Amino acid sequence: MRSIVFVVPSCWHTPRVTASHSVLPDLDRLDAAGLKALILSKHDELVATHERLLSRESEIEHLKLLIAKLRRMQFGRKSEKLERQIEQLELKLEELESAKACRARESADADAPAALSRPIGSTKPARQPLPEYLPREVKIYPPKEDTTCECGGRLRPLGADVSEVLEWVPASFKVIRHVRPKLSCSGCERIVQAAAPSRPIERGLAGPGLLAHVLVAKYCDHQPLYRQAEMYAREGVELERSTLSDWVGGTSRLLEPLVEALRRHVMSVHKLHADDTPVPVLAPGNGKTKTGRLWTYVRDDRPAGDNTPAAVWFAYSPDRRGEHPREHLRNFSGILQADAYAGFHHLYEGGQIQEAACWAHVRRKFYDLQVAHASPLAAEALKRIAELYAIESEIRGRPPDERRQARTTRARPLLESLHQWLQSTLAVVSRKSEIAAAIRYALGRWRALLRYSEDGHIEIDNNAAERALRAVALGRKNYLFAGSDSGGERAAAIYSLIGTAKLNGLDPEAYLRTVLERIAEHPINRIEELLPWSISASLTVIRPET
Image 1 (cartoon, rainbow, N blue to C red):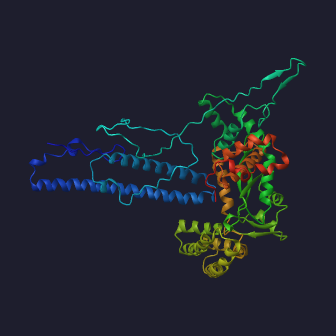
Image 2 (tube, helix red, strand yellow):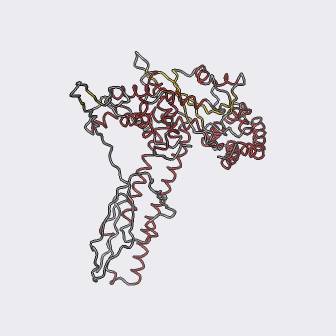
Image 3 (cartoon, rainbow, N blue to C red):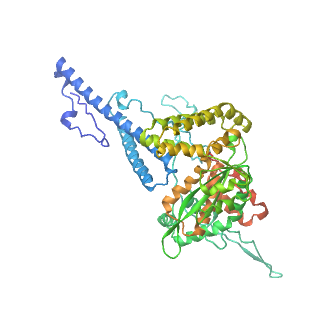
């Protein structure tokens, strides 16, 4: 008699099946009714298992949708509670997906129908090809037979099966020993020797690659210096946090001329995106924190078909007073796309700078109402705004004249209809209601909200600046605060270079390493040659941020 055992993977959160229920009886001794009952019983078990899998699949999809919604809110509301909620959901999703992978692996070896081994509608994400720029290590596995087959015939090449596995090689330290031999003249006793190679930090221990790694780990990967010191210690290299701090300070000072060149490039444009975010700063003397501010200014005309390199410049201030953006933009004239921060309002008074408001901010207010209260009025506003965004999707990347024409003929009628609807709705809702506040927000900025429809260079929203601030929001969570106002200024400088490298599709660590290899001896009057788009040909290109 052959026994068939149904194996239940250990990672399932279901009761373990005992041996008495998992081993089939002797099928030869069962009559027709017994066989029918056995088949129905096993079928019911498989259907029940299948339903549990579908339930888990639905829970995974629900969690993914919920996380996506929370992430859309995360950078609008700076809420630590919201961030913790996202973290908890991410962990739960990881556990469910890990359990799903475990089930798939074990069910592949189970003696069960293929249709029931995978939940209905379950799909694996398409595997992306591995980047061509990654180094390849080729391992060849020749067959045991060399040149002659078992039958005596001669073996000849017939191609090869090739598969690739992505592997991780742990980062490691190495010491570069610079040796400069001395030569002396037997006649005049003159001594000759090659000049010492320059270092990014004079008499510093760190090479350009290590300095770039420390900066990117702190400002791009959000690893505070004390954590980096712990990781380096595991590699057997003891580096004090104070030493790493000295390197960050010395490197940021070295990069100041390059950041200034970047600022000039950003400000020499007709349309600019602007935003700001709070940064806790350690107040001197009392150990408490105050709230500083990081301002971001983004130049990015790629959606309007312009090939000028995109760039972002950050500036730090110890508070949020309106004098700071006034100082940053003292020589700027053109379109400023920003939120409704009151400190920007005085910039528009003289006519040198024109305001373009952000439709994403308008949409967010209605979206919050729809999520919280399932408001039909909010849903109607969202539907109308979505029609405007659908037009923008179609014309993204086209020349400004084409964009302006499409907005005039297609978006303008929608905007006029939306304006009438907002006014009529405001007249019938309670003036103290949340929906009335959202409508007044839109109507109060209506002229600035219309400006994008009149100029093909302008975007419908200020998302370019909000994307630039995401790295700050993540880093603020990890390293908690800047150590001082000067620390905030250093952060602004490094964020500028890292953000611009990413906007231009460069690996920020490779970019900073190349800059630090050259900048100590580079002529100051040609500092623009070290901007990301000027040296991109020699660097690894990744997918640019848009």
